[in-house]
Amino acid sequence: MIYDNRAEVKKVLIITLLLNLFVMGLKAVVGYYTGSLSLLADALHSVTDSANNVLGLVTSKFSSPIPDREHPYGHHKFEAVGALGISAFLGIACFEILQGAIERIIKGGEPVRITPIELWLLLIVLGVNIFVAFYERGVGRRVGSPILIADATHTMSDVWVTISVMGGLIGVWLGYQWLDIVLAFPVALLVFWSGWSVLKENLPSLVDEMAIPPETIHAIATSVPGVVNCHDIASRGIIGRQVFIEMHLIVNAADVETAHTITEEVEKQLEERFTPVRILIHVEPPSYQSEHISYDL
Image (cartoon, rainbow, N blue to C red; front, side, top):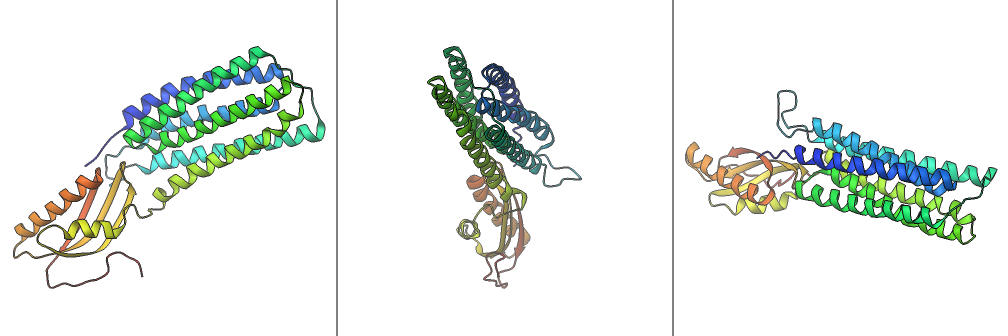
């Protein structure tokens, strides 16, 4: 079974791209006029949001689940590669934020000027970020899109960054100029943590880490009448997005037709549990014996 979610992913990415461009422009303008280092750093963080949306549109275009001659297992990993690109962008943003904060400490700079108008504009930014994060995460989970979930994680970090920056600017408004520089460091920490989270979520797919415990697949397969045992079970992919399962199945069948009927029932049970899934089964006679459920030594 093959599930293509690219049309919906593209629609979400275009909507969030427009919203992120609006947020980025508003932060940059307010940051420029107030001279706030933390807000300019936050605007830089938002630049990566827009870049991530563009990256997501490109990778989504090439991440078709439909197999072809050159990619017989489909193109799902293009989307995971795009998610890793988001992680790289976050790392760059973290470095830029830290560099700007350290330079301000060493060289000094103009005092930050803030008024209630700028604070109200930042509330609008915060509202847009919250909407984008929950919108992307909701659709990403529903359609099983790593790129949308990764981008939602990034945008959620924007929410916390903006809250921190607003707190600092309120402090600056009250006369505590040093808060602007101090808060640039936790902003960088939040950006780094977002990048690490995206990396941790998508790396298993790229290195073909086990998707389903072999014991679970073994239990489902052996519950089907006619199955004697199964071994050398392997799985990869992402549950809910696309999973690939391979196994050797020992069946109690006197002819090929009966063996085929048994394997089809095994495939049906696995598809009901882990759809969308592609399954490859090697059938063996009842005389064959093996206790190696998986490939562990």
